[in-house]
Length: 298
Image (cartoon, rainbow, N blue to C red; front, side, top):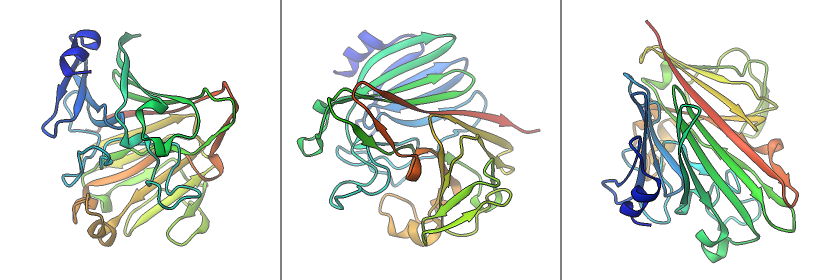
């Protein structure tokens, strides 16, 4: 659909569709002075600005904004696999959902929140990725908080196995100065050397970090004294959390990531990863949901 058609069918005073500077079709949601932007490419949340605050989500200035390429930053949708493909190294990292253009299927107001719903079906992905029937929806609700829910429905006659993530990138003042709480006492895998540890206290950052926390449904708090705010990252339908920062060397190796941008971002990801991967029987569904709130200090 064209932007004009989208605005005619799904637009409203608080929902507006437009082409951004890269040519991507985006929807801007407004609610009580806060706003969010979601691109139809990848059903990708690119911005969440609470009233009177700076953006909660981080975007790389080096990101690709092109057909068949993932967007770096915001909240990418990783599905139907998280990380590398379990059996085919030639497949794209983090699945095909973030590479596809999704369809808008609903928008409006619900219990005071402005919402939009996008859908991905097999007909919207390249033939090489098709291996069964499914319906995946991305529901975004904006109120005093941001809610993003990935709903996976198995519409096939066989089981659907997957891992997934709402791979949230957060905008911070300085990685060395923040902490992430809510994971104390949780077992985690350090994927840099495949060792297993138990978290003691808050998560601090002084080097490349890629940690998968297991058996946790708890919310995390990103405490950012430089920006004078705390970001609460709550979730449902997830028993694993990933914390990531590439630090200097990996940043340099990534073409869609600025060499010094690691200072200003941290990922606290709502996932179905490792032991939390899921299998849906025919007709079953699963919802992976993140709820993000920002509290300013002082």
